[in-house]
Length: 154
Image (cartoon, rainbow, N blue to C red; front, side, top):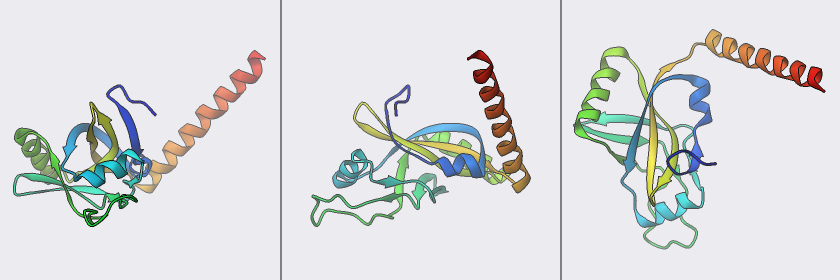
């Protein structure tokens, strides 16, 4: 999996199913050495993670990074809260938007750019059940159209 920026390690596909992604932001992650090695092996799960803003800083909660197998006492708690690195004005903008509009900050993917781990954060609005059904119906219709075109061209 390649992105235009670097090598994608993990994606949060559930986020695209449960939320409308309105905007995307890139943030660095404050990690320890064994966590970086574990992420490079692809042992990270973003499925139930979310971001919170407290005291002008942004944090990733619920992001599970499995302990590094060759690690020792330096392995960290897999579910510890990780600080994200963004510009202060970006954090303040996100804080205002989240508080005012009732949106959520959800990690979408984790990837490496020039050897540094980056987290793509989405400013998201929750989908209702009927929204999910409409998206599924649209995908099915598109799949049927492509199948019919392929059959007709053969």
